[in-house]
Picture (cartoon, rainbow over the protein chains, first blue to last red):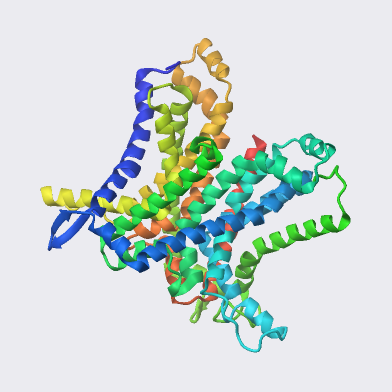
Length: 285
Length: 283
């Protein structure tokens, strides 16, 4: 404890403990306690794993859960594939003014609410939307085309919404790669592909991992995009949680669902960190 | 593939075209939202019926503009109040955390630091329901024990503020810590040598140095709070912030009124971001 006083330490520690204790740790413990309650009568509860049993027994719940996980992973992969060349361009090819302008342009859409972005895609994709009208005008379609309310629309929205969180870490790590190292790779007989595989990607790994984790989390926990772009049959897990809490008022089952989502995201984040040898502290902090 | 290494012309052109296509993709949804705010029609879709300001300033049905639509104005005010409260709380707690993690060594520091990062990897909707569950456990407990109904523990603005604060505080902490780490502690020691008390030294030397980060953290927190949806959705009561109010309208079908609100939001947040960038460049 260098410099500060004991009183100062306590004063600084208190807000942190209050915040993490009252808003993060205890609420999650309480949520777990609620999730292992089973209603046996009016106002009477038993402790049991019945809610988790319901989750595994009902195919719709389990299917939605797995579908959400797989689609979130897919969205993360697509975001990475689209963002990587662009980030490389900004970090390594664009220079000076153009570089900062392009980087800023990447940030701009994300200062706007996700609702506005989703609304934009609805205007573009729906039956009376811009794309449909353009197709009819160009003679490629003879009636309105509905492009909303399918998985592809959800995917477009998810990728769009999380693009920033991939581009920023990628640009940051790629910028720190010395051009001389790339040149050395070429001098030693490498071609574009081998330089990319042996030098650029290993160097960008911390950025790739932190981008992927954040994008995956955002997709998994997204409610707005699947609901608005996917319509009634979008089957996203957060919609089940919302339905149990707000519509059905079955908090016990909803809490169990919330816990399953938390476990899923923790496991995947943990596995990604393990596989790539990174730590949470380095990736986020 | 860097400028100093020659590449085939076709490859370079294709790469450039890809980057341009990417930026078109980024701009497209926002551009259509903005353009249709001026369409003289009941629906934000083609055909183009002519230019109008009615969705901003219109006073008569069916085209009531943003500035005369009470519900939307009230929702904007609600969002503003929530965002100011969340930002103030987050910056205060973030500043305290930054000093704690930078200046003190104590057992359990590593664990607390990781715990502090966790809110970023908890889905927003789970944060929302856990706080909802806990606050009603508390409220019900108090009711059973003393028959007092604590309104602020029921879904409403207080819970919305706490819910958003629970993860925005992490971001404020990271932003402020990053700058505090670069601070040269000898400056503070110089002040102490010159006879200043510890608090005076922090107030006159360290805080002014941190000012850009404090303002940056405030603006980021404000914008994140203003556009938050997931956590807010689970905790909202009868006073809906703007994102929730717009979501409810969007479910019923959209009019260009929503485009007009969205355009104002875009302008507002760009302006804030610009002010922040200018301020940080100056210092």
